[in-house]
Image 1 (cartoon, rainbow, N blue to C red):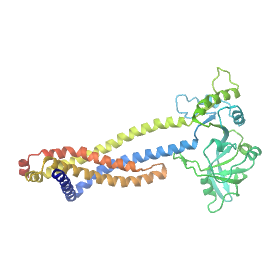
Image 2 (cartoon, rainbow, N blue to C red):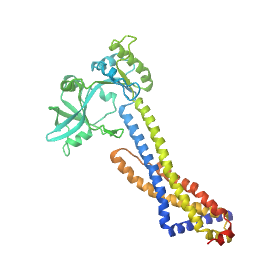
Image 3 (cartoon, rainbow, N blue to C red):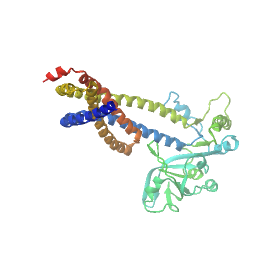
Image 4 (tube, rainbow, N blue to C red):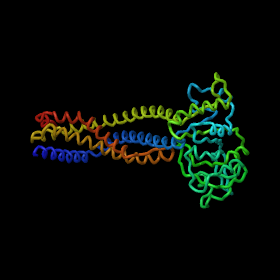
Length: 414
């Protein structure tokens, strides 16, 4: 028990001596902590940005839907070595009636929809919303996507077939056009035509932190065709009831599309089957590079900060050589001297970590104005854990030198 008491008392005394020494050398302590601040801000900024990207990516993947595939003219990810745009450009366009044919003949698909989109300006009286994504879609789009109606309703099969001028609106467009008014029942103008607002979509957020998904309006595909035709391209979305059904259904849809397009067995597909997993593969390769660069830069910043702590601690040990000799002369053990300087180095790093985390909170808010970032308690714990490790690792050599110094020589030091 007495040994435990001595250890506890030694730790408490080391803490008091360390705080007193840091208080005496305020300028030196601040400069040393600044090195750690830079390192911790680098670590937490990287971590919060990657966490934000991860959360945004998962939310974006959920927007694309689960157990779905997209049948289109163009493949996704045209940055690879298979980028043969001239071949893709000459492919025949997708047709809307393919959706009905696939739904009628597929054994695995639970729903098939068709959509086409383009950017437009939407007007209500004298108020304009620019850069709005107008989506023409079949009524089954609600079954193949994750969009839900917050208020009102979606258009019916009859409205889609007759090309009724009705529109379902995203929250961002509603906010831009109807500041204080209730949008349902109002008429807006799209391409010079009046459309009745019949529904509001639930707020979805942004795709990959870049594109505002709520900045869209949806009208029946037939109404879209009357205005723009299908020159902007048609996308087919095929929904499957389960992951197992999707694995089988992908091959079935490919075969059905080849039959619809009347392709010979030796001919290549003149269409693309795109899957959300393609985004995941590209994302994983991108984040691997980000992690690698981030770890290198943050390690470099922490190493520089640690070297600064080590240098200052060596100076502190040299300046307090006589104090070390006196403590040893009155009975202090080597491990007590070691602990004293390790505590001092750790306190400097912890103070730097506290300031760094505070600055990182501000940095996270700034990043969120332009991109995505998210600070979790794990990130804060990581920051303080790193501070402790840096203090112990880079403070060990100076502390060890102090602990092993000869008390007689230390007392003679001037």
